[in-house]
Image 1: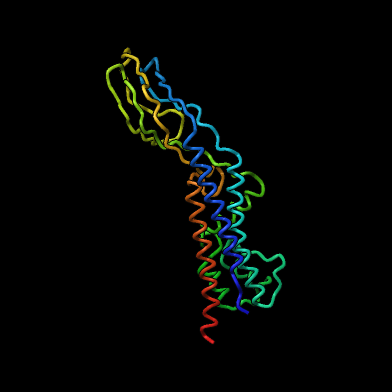
Image 2 (image 1 turned 60 degrees about the vertical axis):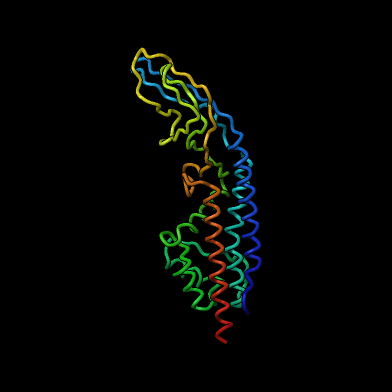
Length: 257
């Protein structure tokens, strides 16, 4: 029996809908997020820095959408495994797409479970081409680990400041900056402007400008520091590629008859 992977693709479509909704949610938040810049002056050195205040946390509901997207991507692979088991005359009860630490463990999991009757070429494809093990296909392994993490904690994004555009200021009472873009090159609340001469005239901000922000996976999470929406889209492409390569392999059986 040739397996059908239509349900796996339906789950993938649902994941893509969640990713699209997440993109809209984060864009809206980042576009309307309020911020406030102040100039801090070190009284001893005269050095001045911009301090960013009031970048709020990402709405917690965004974490729910992230979890839904991740779960549907992961389940798409489980649906593939179930179809392989059914096509091989086995049961699809408790079948999951095998993720392990090594290639040998993946192969053992397939041959010792409900997919054990799968054609040798399918087993080889999963082990040697899809490579769902650490050091093999790190994107898919990361997806698997994200799905596990989401079962225990909300995957709340962090907001990273990339810079400002439309920023205007008068520095030391004489240097005019108009409609500038400020690029942030390091994390932290303090953004260095330049060295200052003690006793110079006070600087002032004329236009706060608009922040350039990005929503990233937080500390301790798989894909830490990576942009969430772009990463989820890459994971969707990886899952889609897995479905396609398995489906094509089974289609090759029909062509050979």
